Length: 281
Image (cartoon, rainbow, N blue to C red):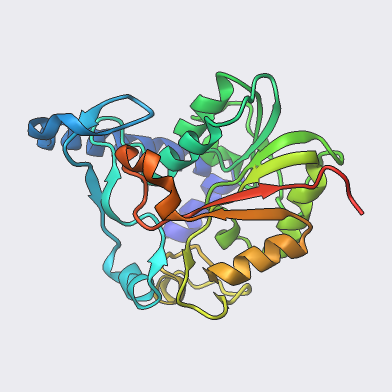
């Protein structure tokens, strides 16, 4: 019955907007609970670069029992650990890192493609750049940007060399044809354009664990640490795939990000600078 009802809502094109509204209500409830529980830690320590609130400690991110096995076994950097969520606004460590790194660049009036837009990153970008948002299921993101477009990351409708930046934070692990998506992102970037394509990754894996054809949420949680992921990237293999798609890639290790530790960024996470060469061979 639940599946039939879901299919009906999908045919009426209201399933994803309703899911988005439900998630927003859950988010608000959790945020209010955190504000109350962490009130005694307010005033010093970490600073959120989204809402500017200061707390002695932030809220931890704890994986579910279904996800924990794969994440712990493979030592995956995936948005879990201490000090993940800002108690005041619920920004995530991965958002705060991306916002901090984007702040190094002058993005005034640049053309930005923001895939699966995270609210806090989108709000940061729209104040300085010309932002186009897109996702394969845009209904999930209507509450973030009412103009979000339906786009398949493996087959964009955009012309070559359309954007100065492409932001796709933690999306490639969801896409079976990830290399094709990398090629498409490369294609729509202008020469010299940049991309932010952070993903969950492991530094202990020699090769990426993946099953692009999988469609079993329980198995996906057990294998990849999340019910809608299709792989866990070995870091070196991920970098190899990006370079094979044509990108110049530079890894900024966590130890070199000390100036941002006060933002409560993800412990151990590197930042990957990705650029389309200015002059192609």
